[in-house]
Image (cartoon, rainbow, N blue to C red):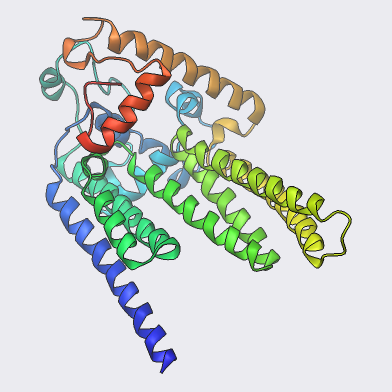
Length: 357
């Protein structure tokens, strides 16, 4: 009887997850507009040229890998765009537009729509639909996390709140490539839960494998958008917290012959091995998709960081200085910790927060 009871619970949980995923995808896809609704969309679709360069032409020595868009942002997001277009039957359009003059911020939004070459409606719909799939998968992962940690009711409520939030709707219906990053961050949290569970149950081989999976995920996340490196930071902090906790337990029982002391020591060793494997896997998975880093990875990483810092500094000036760009793009800059905290709290409830950068 207990078998059927547990089995029925699993089936209900599975069906609820499938319903949440399907409902989210239907909801988001119904909101997609097959037109440029954000300046970054014109750039993101054009970036598919790097998908063609890497996977179709297999030209890893092209001078195009030295261009500024690759120095400032890693190319996995371009591969996602290119793959979406490939699967959507738009193979002939991949990389056709190139990266020249994608958007002129000194002119109005309407002027850009009328004067620059834009992706077709088919291309935009396909890429935006791919974003909807990624956010819907994030809903499913959040449901899984809630189910694993708290139970069915919390899992459903949290995933519904997440799915219906205006920020998630924006990520799912704009081709800005934030959606894959959200998916990879939520996936990282789920993998960390499996890692900790395996560690607690003394399944050390499984915990090491999960650490490698987290490294793979972190490398791809950082390769999608550089902010994805936060997944790696979170995992490392998590590991250090566990080591600290286990070290306290170990030294508490220093003079005893408690078998728990040996377990603490073993856990610390496994965590250290996991951290090393995670670091190597993450580094390899970040560098492997980016030919810009092949010849001198350390120098390339340094230039990427310096370029990104310079870009952010320039953007602060451009978007916060009145009429530096066209006034349509002017916004306030969040440049202090209290402003950041306030913005995070407000954005939970008010949507996109377009008045702030």
